[in-house]
Length: 305
View 1 (cartoon, rainbow, N blue to C red):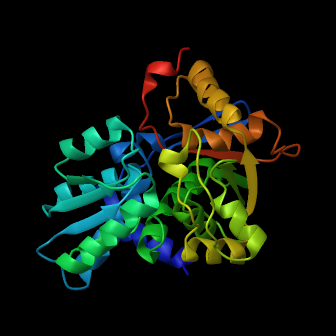
View 2: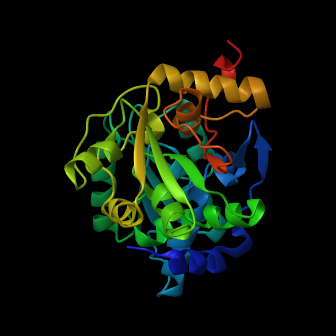
């Protein structure tokens, strides 16, 4: 479980190692352009906080760090490892986009492709970390990771003067948890998922994290089968709600952000914007709504089609 205090501590720890990403107002909304973060997603925040916290508490093992990822978390861990001069080994599914695999290797990470889904890559990564003694960096279910992601919300609050509602795409839930903890009692958080990746929606219905089938256009970034225990606990405490959108709505939202604002994002990121375009979320008059544009590791070739 994490709180705003943990997020504030993460911000101090990470400092200038991450970018303060801009916001701009468009169509009556605030768009937080976190796709401009190092490695193209918010994940660098949590990865830095996780690894730097380990450094504070005794240092990093000779084997370095190990991560499992659909792509973005691995890119972040690889970036952090390169910045801190430690080895990184990243396990990804065989379905990970080629653009992400190529970037992982360019960042100096050893890449292992295992299985068709994230869960299989995760199992292999945790075994490797246990065998080698490396520091395991979970993509969404570690306190330091969630708190690090929440630093985005502290920036958003300062940049906008405060918002009423934050819409955020959810996979395993680390970003959602960090934002909810940072803004607890200050703003509501609405989690948005594609219908094919409903892990958090299923967890709310069951009253606990449960396995869900994942598929569809955003499975590479939002394809965690099960919401993390920490994210679910934070969401339950803070009252996070859930919405589902269709794949076609996600595709349309991604294209709309490009056509209207020349913002190029990945499909998973577009889920949050899709909730507004479809009317799944309807702001009240005067409501200050922020959309988190959380990742841009995508093939842009189909944006103009």
